[in-house]
Length: 163
Image 1 (cartoon, rainbow, N blue to C red):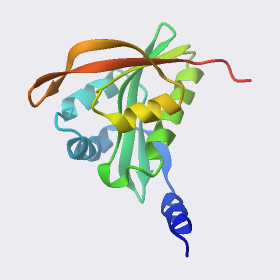
Image 2 (cartoon, rainbow, N blue to C red):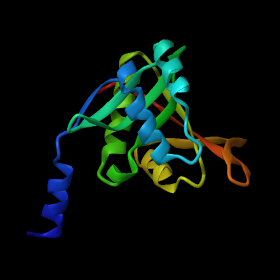
Image 3 (tube, rainbow, N blue to C red):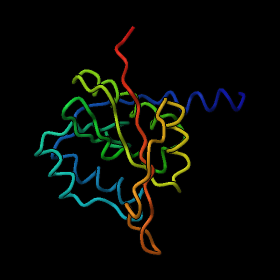
């Protein structure tokens, strides 16, 4: 079997997307802690659910392997968090989550999507770039970092109506 065939089989493991629920928060937080040096708290996730922000989980074999949360208001969506478990990265799950997020944003009449990303998160920047996001600005000292604070790149995409 070729390496490409083996990679295709690894990608073919079934996944499903569904809205995040309160009973997902421990699993979501566990992925968050594995993924980030400065993770969100369970309370932040709970507050997002209570605020009725669109929040979805990516499931594989009945376990959370990724998620996203966003806010939508006044025709604009703001990506709050997109995350894939580090053990599952590099398999297209982040792209799947991002496309689902944009589909939901478009369905709720958002005309553009904004996000912040650490300049040091090159994989995420490449993903956002490849999906049509453009850098539109910078937020100085936005993120906590080991040696103080790290800037955020602000990126955006216009959501054109489906053809």
